[in-house]
Length: 173
Image (cartoon, rainbow, N blue to C red):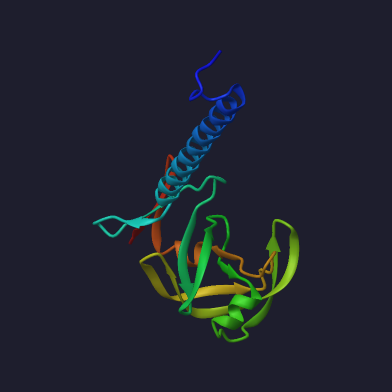
């Protein structure tokens, strides 16, 4: 017979279950925090940065593309760098937000076929800290939510572009 102070088997089972549950909750919380911390570190490593010599280094994102924050006529945008695109291409919505003039009508040849667009000359474009004030921009790249923007050759031709492993380097000429 157990002494009167000792817990019953049911009480022992409840305490053990509670302790085990607390242990697993603490472990799950620690793992969640660790993964969130690691994800933040990984994402921070994907941000473009400028070297001392003025080069812009753009790390390759997980989807294999290169992205850089910039501006079109002082309107913020995130560009997908497309070395195969002949010009900077933006959505009609972004063109209105950037207060671009209408431009002249053109037919655009895209991977999805031809479409109508507009060509505007003399637009200031910035990618990271690199800027050029006389860029040709095509409008009418309407995909998805209307925020699409490609950084093409009408901007990139003013820079030496190299792809080194998992990064793209733009060097001012």
